[in-house]
Length: 334
Image (tube, rainbow, N blue to C red):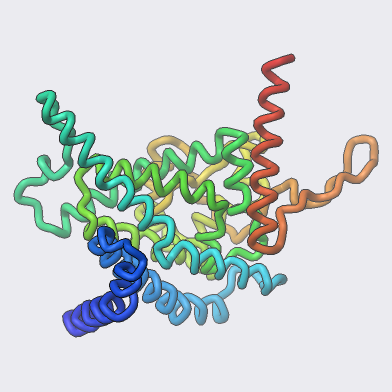
């Protein structure tokens, strides 16, 4: 069954490349990118398969065991647009294959100087391929945890990342609801680390695919947890919903920055660095400043607009980031 699927996938990849992509490249004078484009078709097909699988598996679960009632179906469709942009390989593919030759040049220059860059493969001699794959997954997840911590620590970065948290109707497509600049930063960061530790392009495709599938489950509007032990082995929808909870997941001691449950795939990092919150419950999601508040003098402070459409959300993210930098500048000047 699996081999049949792989054969079908390889046939479809070859057919799409030979029928559409390759003729376009040569017609446009871009024949030098043929090899990278063939890999790009693979990214595209994997993303398309992911989207179809998510729709077939998670969408029915959201209908049967929802964690909360959907109040804005348009918001879910908007998240779907983000998913198509991200899952069909536009950013991840471009970044990885841009940095691949650059990293090769850097490694070559270092070898000429007698310096041999660290490569995780050298520590895994004799490892079963599955064990090596899991090792890469764990290492990348460790670095991803700290990247996520940074998104919640620095005000300018939170100004971008808060778009991801502003979804009050979290759903299976919400994993990809990110500012494009924030996505670009993360893809560059992970691509450089993956190349630095020796991840091959074919391995990276699979690593990204597995990670994305698990993150879609975490964001799904489903009332699912993994039990006392399972919750500590793999990030569950309940564990991650706590991270998105208003006033809990993105705040520390009443301050806007901080939070809990930053683990992307594995809760072990939250346990080790004391940011885990395993409290039960299915909290409402969003960012506190989205909601109307009453000031001490009785005046009403309206909620902040995060936008409803894709372009509006992207623009307002840039506005928030500029405002954050201005606030930092004023603080330093005072």
